[in-house]
Image (cartoon, rainbow, N blue to C red; front, side, top):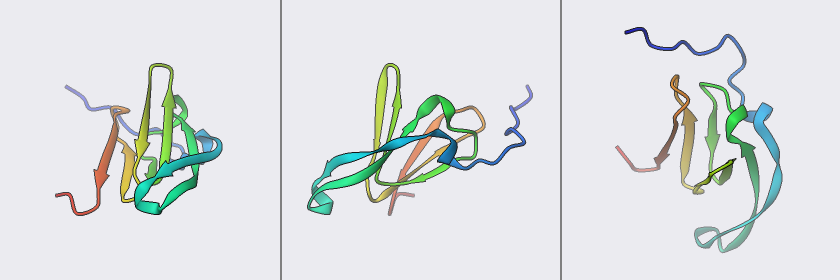
Length: 85
């Protein structure tokens, strides 16, 4: 079985940035201007620092302020919280 290769392009999440909107995060004391990304345009290797919102047709992922999300070579969105092993 051959693993998929990351594309030969910049893994910057900026290509998927749709805009920004206020989102409520209690740990930040209220509404925070939060970047919104198009899930289908996030390239393999992209890393998002929370807070962030990742939208797709049938779901939305909210990345907490203390978390990061990355796109693996299989296009999975992997979210890690600070302090998590």
